[in-house]
Image 1 (tube, one colour):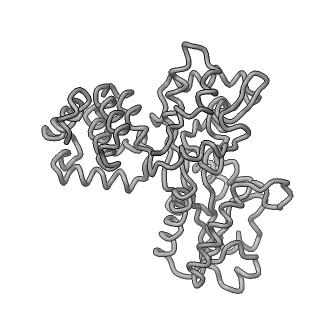
Image 2: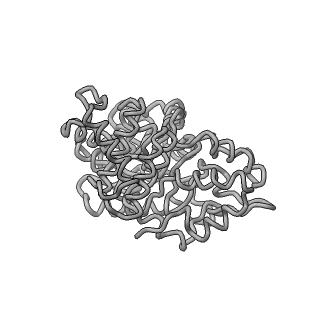
Image 3: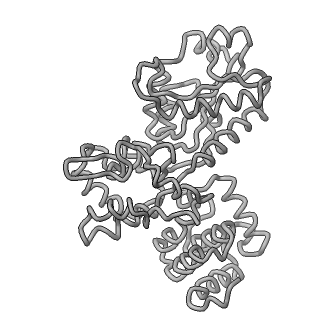
Length: 368
């Protein structure tokens, strides 16, 4: 069974840096994170690129967004890992995709689509800096004449960073940005007390100005290949009296088993608890510990619990760090089962299921 990040020995050592009044909130921070494995990350990127292949015609040039497009940095970055992923896609689709081609090669092959790929579009700063240093006059000319079209692909994209990127790169349109998960500035990914904790304890790090992450993004996603600097600084920035859990954004190999869970259903109890669904949250904790329910079942119960507390169906992605199509599939399943009405409000049957699920914590024999 995958290890829980909050219970890992390295995490427990990190938690001991907090005083008694704050340690529970710090644990909530860890439980609110979505951990993305290497497999999940590369699969998500491949699916987004495949969607472009399926919806377009002509040759596609694909590039990893690199913080150092000139290649002068001493250490490899996440762009290097992405580069291997993109090379694999070229090998799978050699008649459509060219990974990292030269301008001359793009001109010779009459490239019709240029795709820039990153793991996370957070504040948008890396995208803007990459574009300024990398985009050639020829490429801009092709985009201006609409002979060529620009796309951006990422595992996750924050709406504020996306808007900042589109403001700088006028050739980029929102419908040409594909992300497995969309992040929203007004989302409820964190309890309010977690944000206060990040601000307080960031003063002990060397990056106090990044208390809420670079750009104030408060990113709730950590990749197995590295922690984004848009996550709270207390997770990744050391200080004279502070030792980060992911020092300098690195992931200790001892934590790799924590990334093995196939999705973020482990966040659902915390979401339900914050929404006031206390017994339902405890029930899900019980089910997760016993592995009694499928992930789909646990996600479906989370959707019902949130909707029953007044969360609108079109706002669920501000709570659940799941792809939009997954949330729509859960909603469709709930409507098909009669748990939600046609307009996605909870039905009497749906409320009954929620109540029965709450009862399962007290009486496990009432298992659905």
